[in-house]
Figure (cartoon, rainbow, N blue to C red):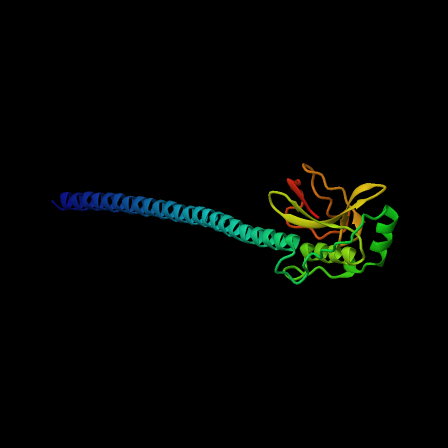
Length: 213
């Protein structure tokens, strides 16, 4: 009887050990499973956050850029238009009755004496439109016929001055540097080459040239 009792106790201990082992393995599997789910869930949250952030940033940037671009373009357009018509601006384009087209030599001499190109470019205060208006006014004050020229691309607008010389025809002058500039529809404006302050997208080609005499 004693041997049977000891055998029964041994069997019980073995069964208990098996139960504990199985239980431990089950708990371990549950922990690993939960850990995997948590990790995957966290990764999904992180991915969703990154995706939402990137999308939101892109959309906000695009909306902000388009709004700012449209506002700046419209302000520049109407400012240049007002200057071209000689209305409501501190540097209205001058108009004279007795004006004459200069020779190319007379134009170069006038530009050498004129100080418009020495003015500092101040964004929002004294920009390309102001340079062009002042040079135009100074030329006509000296009896030289001049034209305010508005140049536009899809992304920017610019202003220069034109002179119809009697010996070399129509000449465009960049008023920020007094350099002669070739303005051609379908080509980029040569900002750096002629010493002009360029907008952000200086590579866009010219789409329109409006000459206002």
